[in-house]
Image 1 (cartoon, rainbow, N blue to C red):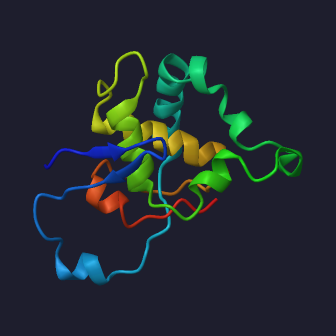
Image 2: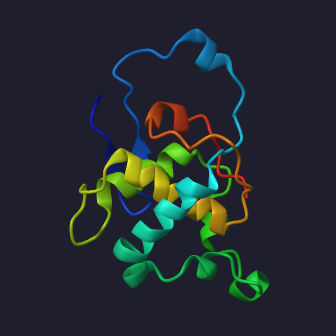
Length: 141
């Protein structure tokens, strides 16, 4: 797999796939996010260990009074962007004191926990840990 690179404060991520995607994948419409409750629970444990001290609890991402905060919320910053961007940013730059130490499986679990915390419904299939697949899945809370 080609290395991931992030650019500046916006943490935009270019995801190399190491080759061209199959035509079927390239033509497929964006799929909704899918994760399991179990995957989100695993990710929640990791989030508590690795993320909460800097980022706070997930409930802070989805404030009940979002209008009071203006348009600068986690959801408004990530809505419509590919989950591959979020996955790539986390796997490259987090945790801040040890960037790049989370495995792809751990990172997918954390993303699943973030989806659950943003009220994206769970399903029967785990969220994949393949950046190329995640690039086609929008964050759509």
